[in-house]
Length: 195
Ligand SMILES: C[S@@+](CC[C@H](N)C(=O)[O-])C[C@H]1O[C@@H](n2cnc3c(N)ncnc32)[C@H](O)[C@@H]1O
Image 1 (cartoon, rainbow, N blue to C red):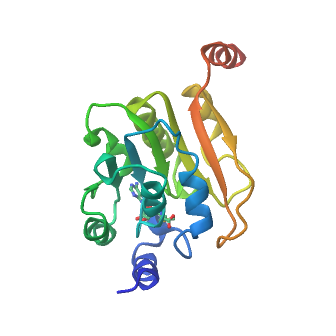
Image 2: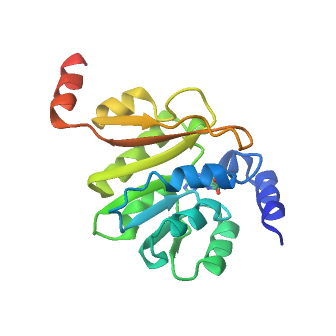
Image 3: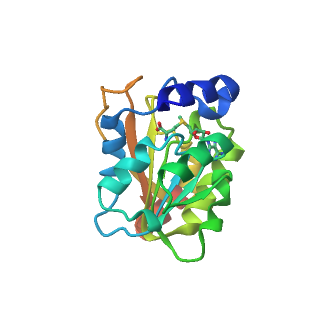
């Protein structure tokens, strides 16, 4: 079945999980993959769907054997196994990231619909992500919204800082890529005092 048909069929079956009209465009996928540090080796992707972002992650030089994919939808998971046989596909929710193994991860790339998640779900996922990321690791997330898709209280409680790209207009709808990382210690202390 063609990719778009597969995506649309799953959107109709599981709308809250899929939560997008179409797979991300090549422009958006590339904008995400380009945020992976050039020194990164181990990468995890959360909510890869039909693997559009996955393709660009491999394109920027990440070896499929170093790639762990966490996809909650069994149909997409099987699709990913067929398309990227050398990657490790977990048909598991994103907060089970520890299943990827004990070695630190250098970058987590996420297509998760964070805006349709509760504060508790976001907290669980972001805590799992930052407990698996190495000291300089990054969490890369796109959003269609006008502000950080990770709630500010979670950003503060985990001691994070973030940057954002310009809006990627060639996507339906246009989207922005956010990159979260641990704030330098001094900034974390100031944020804690401000709380
Ligand atoms: C907006 S689609 C993004 C698909 C693809 N990354 C793209 O950009 O085209 C969201 C994806 O996240 C998956 N998903 C939703 N909640 C999830 C969770 N808690 N853990 C893992 N995957 C999840 C959905 O099944 C879907 O494949």
